[in-house]
Image (cartoon, rainbow, N blue to C red; front, side):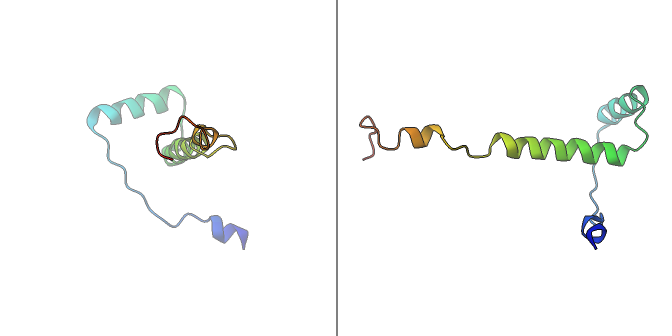
Length: 75
């Protein structure tokens, strides 16, 4: 049952220009990437999760620290 939820059923198409495709090909040969689909999925999800992580609200954000400051113009 858990495997069905993780099963990949959604397709994504990615187009590259010739220079990007050549760079991808060189990279995959140099670093012995055998599964380009897995490599791209990992790279994309790493970027997404990293962005989510970096923009995640923290307990003490700057806007919260100055919320009741007397220096604020918008009382």
